[in-house]
Structure formats: structure tokens, C-alpha cells
Length: 229
Image 1: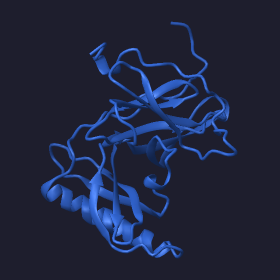
Image 2: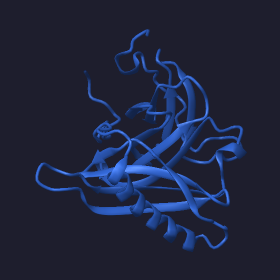
Image 3: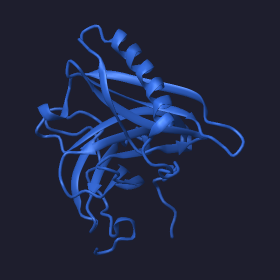
Image 4: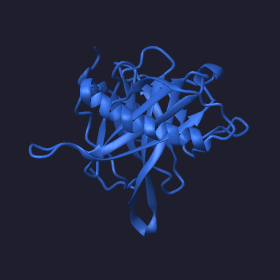
């Protein structure tokens, strides 16, 4: 294949390795996430945050020797708390450690926006230095489709698929470069035949125009080996 002019990291993170947390492990993660939620509530002076309820976990992704597990919860006042717990994963000799958690509060909810096709959250977790001093924001992206028929969520940068995740109970997590060479990340949802069923930018629309400059995207011909299934 010839050289590419899109020299960016692709599929940099490990695919999900574990199922959703349960038992004592879920309690450990819950304690870390709720502590971050309390900090977020204290910082949200303009919101009546209320108390967290059940936590929804998203697929795990591991990058740079750390594992990230996104999470969200609705509170007793209808506010959404969203974020992630990260840690150094367990080995044969050591348990998981070096836990960190981040959370934010918002009253901007998917059910109040009929034009949303995917409910997406994101957080920058590192950077990647490219050519000529260009730097990409390595970004954790997670979300839930708001349309039916999706099988695989893809992160796309200027039409190049840089990560993908098979939906697990209608949830996905991606790790992908963003904001690189004036290109910005989009999340696309594809069905089992590789047909696009939804797309969202990580950036808000301005007067009907997306901030992403490139509207041309390659389609997936085969969603994770399913072919025409």
C-alpha cells in the first residue's frame, strides 16, 4: 500500500477485555466514581445535583498501561453525572491499583434533544505527538445510540476510522486521536451490513454547520467479520 497522508494512531487501545463490573469489583469502582461525583456536585454551583442512583458502566478500554471504565448515573433531581474510573490493571502478581476517577454534572439530557442520534461523552486522557509539531488529543469517548440497528461504533478522524467498538448492551467506549491538523473526531454507528445509521460530532453545531471540516467518510464493508449477516 502507498504511504498515507493521515499519519495518526489507529486502534491504539486494547479492545474491551472484561464484561461489565459486578460483585466486589463493582463496589470498588462505585466507591471511586461516587467520590468523583461528590467533587463534581460541589463544583456545580448552578445545579441542584441531588444524589446519585444506579450506575451504568461502559466497556473497558486500556491504553498506555491504564484501563478506563466510563460510567454515568442519573441523580434524584434528574441531573446526569458522567465520567470514568481509571486504574493500573491487575497482573498475575498484583491487584489493580493507582485508581483515579473523574466526573462532571450536566442538565443537558438526551431526551430533551430530538435531533441527537447518539448520546456521546468524552474526556481527553493524554496526547500523541505527530509530525511537524502537531499534537493529537487522545480522547476517551463513550456513549449510547439513540436509534435502532447499530452494531459497531467507530471513531473517525477526517474520514479515517481510528477506533471501533462492538456495542455491548447498547453501549460503547472508544479511545481515539482528536483535534489533529485541524481535523476533529466524529462517532459513526454502523449496522451489521456496514451501513451507517447515525453520526455525531464531538463538537456542538454552529448555525447548522459542524466544526469538523471534512464531510467525506469511508463506509465499513464488513462489520467485524459479519459480512452480509
